[in-house]
Length: 116
Length: 111
Image 1 (cartoon, rainbow over the protein chains, first blue to last red):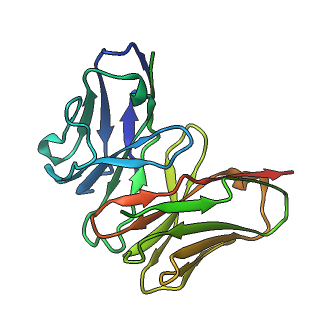
Image 2 (cartoon, each protein chain N blue to C red; image 1 turned 90 degrees about the vertical axis):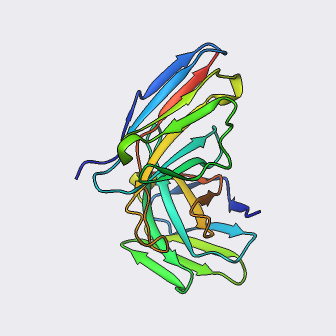
């Protein structure tokens, strides 16, 4: 079974530039998550999708971050414009989304973003 | 607001030692607690999931316990090996359908 795929693996940009990350979840997984992990901290949820609908985006900085999951499969996360404090690893995860009490999330390798 | 704390932040042990990693959380109204492993430059791998009604879960040399009333969980690793070197993250699920993570314990097992 293929895991969660993410690209690119690394990205370096100047502040105020824009950047986009792509995630392909495990086939059949209804729930998709984007997390931000700053160095030395645990991941923090940015947005959660159930199929192609948003379940929770309360911690997404909507003035600069946007995400979409068209057709309920792949997802893209965009930052425009980027700030220095956006430097982090962006992790995508997916889960079956059937029983949230026992739902296990499977994580992709992440995209390491450096904003200069 | 749920907060998850992991102690110690870093740990170095010789190979073969048994060790315990600690996790505490402030809101005991959780549905489950999960332990993850993160290797450098890689994503997270789920190790164990304990439902709120359970006291412990075991997988191979790993044993995780949960005391929901006191807001604590421990991850016990038996007979540690150099391949166990990684960061171990604890996360709780509180029903908002999002995991709240601790900052992790960075483990180094010396050969």
